Image 1 (spheres, protein in one colour):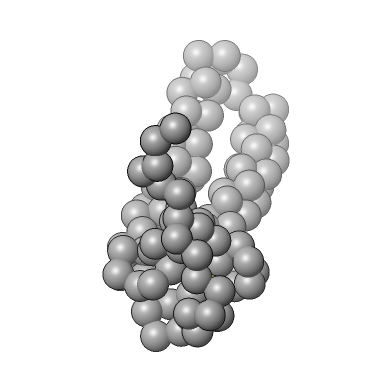
Image 2: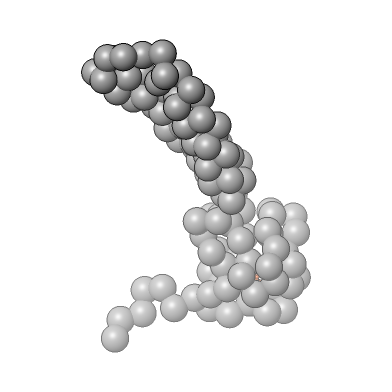
Length: 109
Ligand code: SF4
């Protein structure tokens, strides 16, 4: 997940520099805004969106069908074990089940 954010920030930086350079040669504000919109849509939004979809698909099994799924140390969005600072997979649990603690999800006060 962090990789997607990192690449998006890097892409935004590069695209902004390119757009800034291009803006010197385009004198119509409307045209420039159209170019900015199209560039950010295809250069930032779409790659980020498809990168996130790929990430969710690749980690679906880990997020839904491992012991970590029901552990309070598991961050589902990042598919990440906060306690061990590692990424569990279907075949690898950083704690081997020893540090598992029931999540508090679903508890009512
Ligand atoms: S403590 Fe163990 S069970 Fe819990 S998320 Fe981390 S690796 Fe998974």
